[in-house]
Length: 268
Length: 294
Image (cartoon, rainbow over all chains, first blue to last red; front, side, top):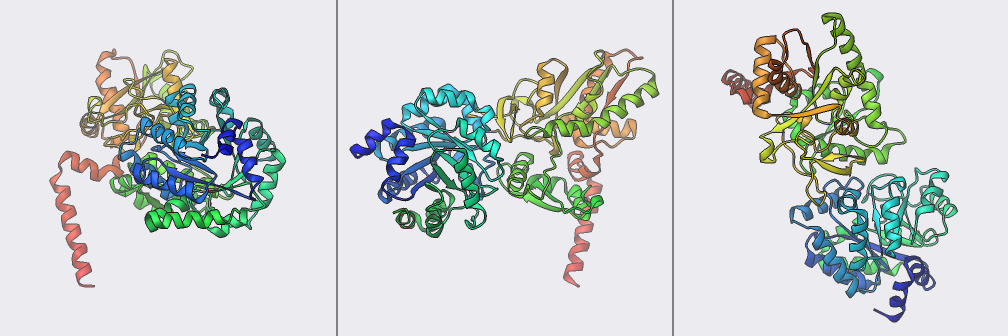
């Protein structure tokens, strides 16, 4: 870990993102489902992310009803659960990764896991494992007050989601609770399907920009180098999730590394 | 409804339910629906709901999400309960007309809980009418292979599929595999309004096992000349069990929410009906002959 990122750790996610952005036009956030295909494979993925210069990483806690996810992640969630991945295993990996790598780590998952754990305990465990924030795919802001206020007490950033269906008024409500950065969903639907960035994404992102001063991350359907290049000038962060997993399934560890390097190249 | 209105209709149904409710699938397809078997998870109702929600988040600009039960995000539970409330209105009027009094108890099976919500809705303000929901006891509550969330406190509060209720889940919030002979009751959650009515003490919940259900079905067929669905037969189990406690002039109301025709394959298996099996064997060999000599 460089001294610079170490000091950014204390500054909070938004400051870290702004620091990185002052050096390059776009940041890259990638994703892995914890325990799929295995913890060893997760570690290789994380090493590849570090080597490629990925800026942020979301680690998904498997859930049995992943309604925001497409077929690749549905399968990954299911298999991880069948393999017996538990909370302790999840936090253990987060802790090891937070110590070993320079990128900030975010929790990604579904609200039932948080609800069962308890908002306060969830935030305590996440923060002591060294994670920096969380994305809860199915939690509307009205229901998020408890977990969001516990998060801020612990120095975690709750990452909220803006979608093309949100009215300007709704976008402002979301912005009021958002922290760190905002996750902008490039199109209606679930993870994994290709998004045509020419179709209304710029207009949507400018509505998000009007609602918040926080950095904007663009996700859902960002799958190729071309897509990442296309996100430059539109968003601060490109999020690539499913396509990484596809690269792993197709090309194994080597294919995965090459894929990440290709994506990272487009952020400079 | 879609056929009547000339709308395109896609139905998501767990692969396991497609197999065990083939007659329903046949009629849905005749009506023009595109039935998509869902292969994720436990391949039952919960997975069909996930698949349907995933479709809808993408297609909501030109598509309505139509959920057959009182679950899911607000306002779906309230909407479905309102639509189903016609059952309660008609049943209350008819039983008053037929017997001149309100029933002592109303029994209804509870999966997600749409038929129960419907029939209970018009009796909620009648304090003398006890409302009884009957869940799927499957192979027995002690076996873990059941879908009884409320009857014996097996479900725990959770938030999934867009709503908060008592779910059958483990300590880390992962949903359990459920089991019931009746596809319509084989589900992890229960309508949040019913969960509230349980907590408020307005509805009592019981469970009926698969074995009891088949037995009650046989009894109701023979003694009443009715063919209730396996789902509805759950309500009959508890009604028949409890009726002897009542005096002769008291009346109970049982909601036969569905007909058993769709369950003919499952019921014939459960009853071990050899004549039905012979019939199917002959039918299959006829199809095979047709295929062999076109």
